[in-house]
Length: 328
Ligand code: GDD
Ligand code: MG
Image 1 (cartoon, helix red, strand yellow):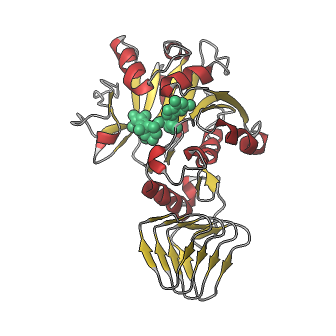
Image 2: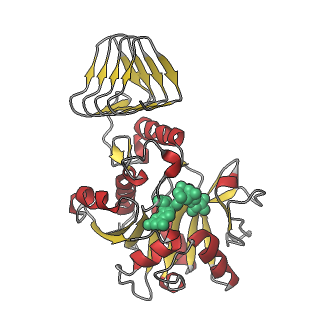
Image 3: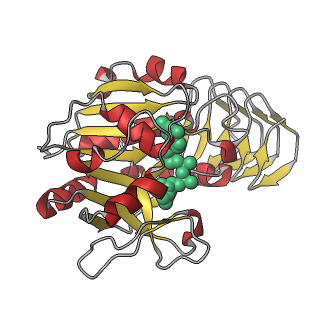
């Protein structure tokens, strides 16, 4: 599919503090959802919308991305790396990464938050940006409690009126869903080599200067994996609804199992669970909607529902857990 936009930036430098202990040894974007790193799902989505060149904006644990993604050829896309010695914030990271893209003055770039998975139609967002000749286009979704997000009220033509990051009293239920398109002119407004928040500084500044910012409203699947519970849910959702991402090959079994997994014939596994390398599931055990870390053992008749089980952990005979992060 020929796209008027072929370049993208993925913001993958955040620390993911709220995701501990999952992020103790792995940066949030490299955590596996449905058996593949979050970033891989995003790369595949970008490629399918016509993106051919991506810069990963890295900071926290920058060194783990390149060994996995390399030059991108394995994923059918060109991948480069921008590294911040000190985190530059979302805006600073965008400006730093953009310097590797050699954007022409008539080009635009797609930018993703590195912890969001969505079913939104990125190609349609690109076309809206292009057809409206927007400076910026924001993918928006609707949530019942917008306080933890960027609240983005629109006028009747879909123009963004304000950008209000994490407000106690949100003015609208449409929020920034974490996928932006910037044209070269708006990108050049972000100062370089400086800590900048795109949400708190850049968007309000562009609006104050009458840049034309449009909302692309799409209410299909969307999840921000800010907490361990949302992470577990995202993984299960992607396994149960394989159309949400083509990065994972899912069988009809309702779960994903890596190598050397042993499941007793009387055990039940499903609900979008992931069994990592070397996991053992005992007789009569039940594992539903859970992420089980490498070499963990679920003993006979234990029940693990909507949980995260840390690598190497043993869940005792007959133990029952639901919705918990189980970590040593
Ligand atoms: N390279 C780099 N450097 N990346 C960063 C930095 C940085 O200094 N700080 C944050 N990021 C990345 C994170 O890894 C994440 O992918 C993205 O930028 C957004 O940061 P979060 O820390 O996840 O922000 P949030 O979830 O509180 O809020 C953001 O996302 C919401 C939607 O999920 C905002 O963009 C909100 O407006 C939005 O509604
Ligand atoms: Mg987030």
